[in-house]
Length: 511
Image (cartoon, rainbow, N blue to C red; front, side):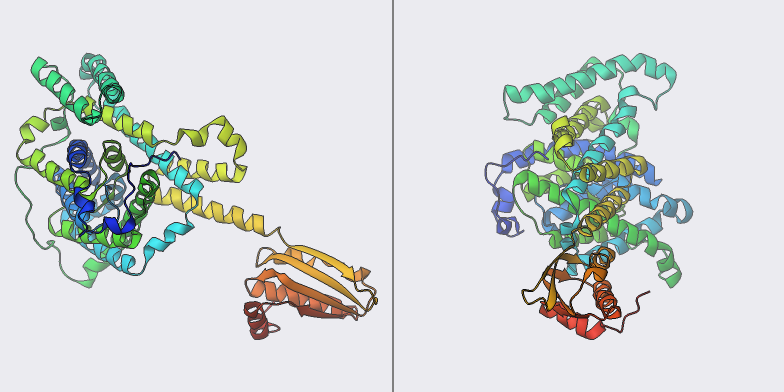
């Protein structure tokens, strides 16, 4: 994964809500990048609302609510959280069967679960996600971001007549947007090139009266602020039984995507973030959003990458994205609705290209990487792309990594032996990790019938005994020597191994 470093990596203590540098270290770039993100959030929030089967305002309310709240409660500066497709897919059956009120209730409960998980230290699980799974996660999301733009590129959702009349102009606009996005930074970096591309293409389309798909075609924008209210559901155990499975899934999927995105931004900015604080912040944002009539959300890697590449680094950029989104849909809704989708598609293509780790699939890298690591990355990518579910892909990648790891260390047990000078005993030295997967190799590593002395010592100084399977295996080795009239003694056990052996030897079933 390529690393992009900021001119000044903020220290962990700089990221606290009360730290001035967390808000004012980069104001101009943060405000401009927040505006770009807000423009990109509108069509996506509407799309996710449609996926979930709810009114577009549900996704839009959620997006500005979560973005504003997480800027003050989250642990990762510069990360954008809002309504997402991953969360929308989870609630489709709930909305279809029980209605939108149950969605709001499930959102509140999911947030409460996330707050509890954050308090329990769920951020620590990030250490168990291998680098190859992270690569697969990033590359899969880049592919999904691009695939989501294909219908907007080819106008596959339009009628044949509309498609034939608009397709050429649409592709030309997207190409022009990409030219501005990649070309302008070579001239000046004073203004984010994605913002310039959106402004130029929108101005051209509106002034020239060109007929192209617009943001307004995605759905109606709300014209009023949301208000706080309790979800209109019965407060009974029956309701809890209905929403709990969905809330648990929302909580875990949301935290998984948020913490992985936070880790990615940590790497890109060469800084650190508080994953437990981020977990609690996501929960607080979702609880509040449920009471404001919004759907559950989490971190968005696409918008977070837009923010990062547009110069957004501090909490101000996240806050600005939510505030600008609110202004755009309420005060400038008619104008925003006329922005051609081609302009936003160009921005998202830029995000997809920039997010994908091209070096991870280069021939040199693939030749040098162990095949098992390449397999983990490919499996992670394939499952995420096929299921459109990040949780499935990451879980499969972690599980496969664990299988490969266990398989690798299970063959690292080595047994060597020498006969003492007086020819009274044979000394065996065992090295490696002794646990359930390596114990079979251990039992068969001794040459029982070749021993011609009355006593053997098995030195475990350089071995690590992990579980009772290892104790059972050592007892089996001692028993095999005893069957041949040879006394076997275990020596060199560390304190943990000696204690485990003393408590369980002869008391654990071998079956």
